[in-house]
Amino acid sequence: MYDAIMAETITIPGHDGDLIEAYYARPLGPGPFGSVVVIHHMPGYDPQTKEIARTFAVNGYNAICPNLYTREAPGASPDDAAAAARAQGGVPDERLVGDVAGAAAYLRAMDGANGKVGVIGYCSGGRQSFLAACSLQLDAAVDCYGAFIINPPPDGMPLKVQPIINLAKDLSCPLLGLFGADDQYPSPAETAELAKELTALDKPHEFHTYPDAGHAFFAVNRPSYRVEAANDGWQRIWDFYGRYLAS
Image (cartoon, rainbow, N blue to C red; front, side):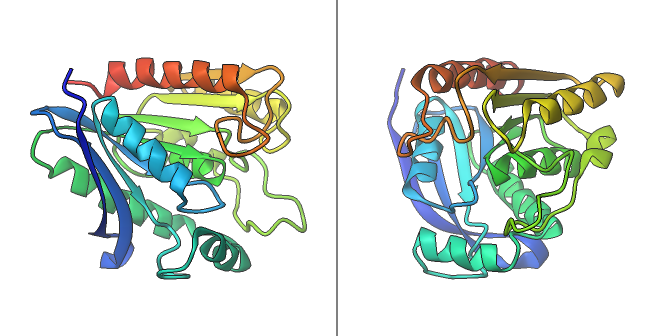
């Protein structure tokens, strides 16, 4: 398998035609390739998230990670940009959908793309992955420990968003959910409630909850990292996208 990739920072049209920064990684083989929009976690558009985009490229997918904080802090470090976004309560849902739509359109237009686009998100991005899959026509979605789909954030939390379980009826594609049993946001009770709702609506979904794992168990640079859960989670992602996004 030819495994060379190209990765670079680009500019794409986002919500309302705004030009936003994004990180683009793609295989250099002939394709055709499926595509993935990577939604970064609340700590921001950081080196670890860019590495995830490159991982998708190595494994045969075009990938774009839009910088959701471009407008709040253009050119700022990930920490400063995340602080600016938190001060405003996070990314507005409508704007998120527009930015993901722009990234998906860019991916579909690439030479060698097979026309199929999935989305994956971590932490706040997990909720946003579900939001995008309920608001846009996508082919597969992965929610990695996304909270506040069922319940709103508690008082004092900087993220100011509303529950979006009412959108579940509009889910446009299969959903893979990867969660930690020791997580509080979302708790196992919340993910079970989401699964129950999706089952009632006959929406295809696969949820997996890992024992001895909490929030951010995929984050290799944080104490929350759990090797076994992350390795199993990655294998489930490859299997899932292989079914729904591969040629």
